[in-house]
Image (tube, rainbow, N blue to C red):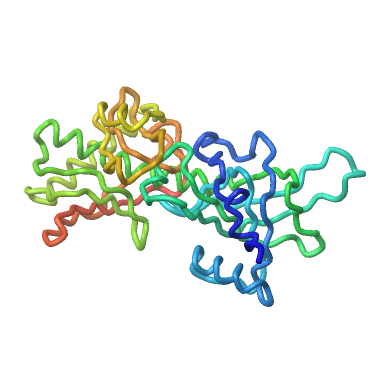
Amino acid sequence: MPPHPLDDDVQLNFTYPLYKHETNAWLSSTEAFVRGVFACGKGADKKVQARVKAIFGYTPEDGYLVICDRTLFCPTGEQLCDLGLIHSHYSTPEEGPNTVFTVQDVRKKLTDEVYDHFGLYEPGVVYHLGTFEPSHVPFRVHQAVMQQIDPERRLLHSRTHAAGHLIAVAVQRLHLRGALSGDLTFNGVDRSPNLVVELGGMLDRKHRQAKRDIQREINEIISKNVRLETRRWNWQEALERGVRLPPKSETTIELMRVITLEGNEGLYLCGAPFVANTGVVGRVQIKKLTVHKKEEVTRIEYSISQNAP
């Protein structure tokens, strides 16, 4: 029996992450090519429905799963996914009408360890879930398409995620100056149900004063509008520069994607699109600081202004 199209390892084992390279683009600069189109609503192939439920956590009443060789759409992970359109790209009327696919959810299934989403070209497939316009014929495999994301949604979630990194930088600065004590490491940003920066380790001073100090520091970082930069280092280069890394045995990626402030401050692995400067983040409010002794972590709850500066 031939393999199911969704299990075609040659065709569907990798999606080039344009969203990691064109982080400020809302329209793809080059064509993408369709690798797979699968109906996944009522009456669809049971294996497709099972795959959709495993990846997205639900099965839609109708709709399609679209896989491309590259994507500008950031999948849900460190920040919420991009939404937008994928449409056919024709140069002459004779080639046929334009087909529009509305992207309603985007997820990624890694083919290796969880750490690999920090890589610049990590393995894995990005799945776009959505619907075609009622009168439109679904894409063909190998068809050229263009991708267009919602720029306002991308900016909001990039600002939100960047704010979490900057809070970690603020804590790091205060720790180096001796204003905060405790062995703290940046574990990541959690966005459910509230925005929270999680730090490994426990602060050992009064929370109210620490909260005020962190607020002052984050205000200064944002007001100075410092440039944010993406570094592309292999495992050894990142290790030598002090980046906190997973054990080498737990990742197969060759190039790490590290986000830093200008001057290599705040060296954190990250797989999400980022803003260009700290000033774009806008107002950040430190809402609550909680030390969890049992888990030995510190959580800092925050919010950002909804509108960009």
